[in-house]
Length: 309
Image 1 (tube, rainbow, N blue to C red):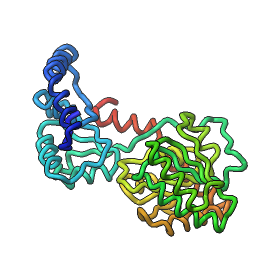
Image 2 (cartoon, rainbow, N blue to C red):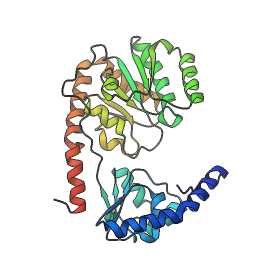
Image 3 (cartoon, one colour):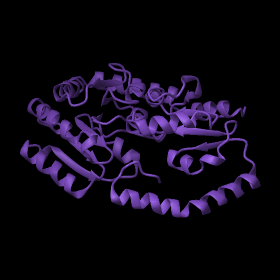
């Protein structure tokens, strides 16, 4: 990895990469000569930078899974990359916009939304006690909006004392301790369950009634929101990054402005107050997910892009 951050540990990491660069370059060159691939899909701009002299505009494709910051060093790099590769694939319209904002022509970008195999087992029944359980899934960090969710959940508990919040995922011990302390300050300890990391998605979504994605950062896509939709759960998420492309507001879930605790609390209580509404939105979410974000559509789009039919 090549770092754009001028901190000593990152500079040392970059220097270590450059030390190994000749072996990388020669090994990749041998690969090209031996295999002669018609298309190569790159998924990391660091690797593209290291392999820059070997890029070919009729062969190489960059599959973008992040939102590119609008900063001088990124504008310089990606504008130069335009003439070195065939095209960009963006995982969302938000990712595409981040490229056009730094000068990449729109006609060089193709949006292919991620698609996944349906994670819900054919025999799946949600827990009967899950209706009042709110979940947040993923890494526990300040950018994920856990603090905002705790504040909103305090409002929810005042009106729905039996509501529960399940937190799945791990984070830095110091931040986890901070969140646990914050929950205690808000009087929420008895209403919160910490589960840590759980790999089995059915074990997670089967015990939830509502899923929240209160992220403060720009999510390039939002896999958690998509997984929840496949399990027939309504999702309440911030209207940032690629999340509005997964969630249809008022139909498959709710979108709110980042940091708007009152708006988040109202959306949660709206679903808790009406079980039929919650189930209906969850049903809509699954229909949308299985229709627009299935693995078969994803593969077809890639085959079309690569000219394979």
